[in-house]
Length: 89
Image (cartoon, rainbow, N blue to C red; front, side):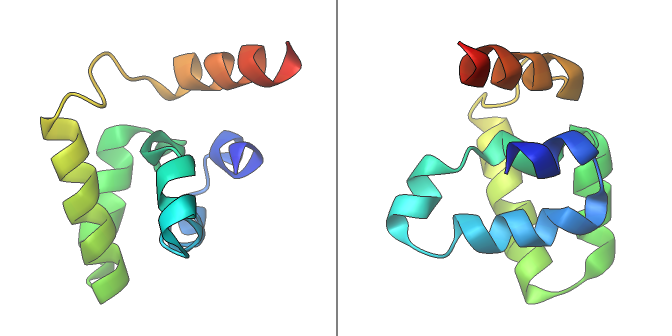
């Protein structure tokens, strides 16, 4: 998932969301931030433009997480660095 995040390809957002929603364990273990490799605003705009049930569900969840503070001070570059530090240590 981190590799998909780092490619910052918006077309991967639905793949990451589908993996996150594959099971309760996957939902809990796949960070919502992984949806936003291209940036938070870009991801929200992309999901809104898709107009599918899947993209609507992902956008709704993303907005809930944003409102709860999950994206305070978020940047894709900083998140990528965090993942790099976490997985390389």
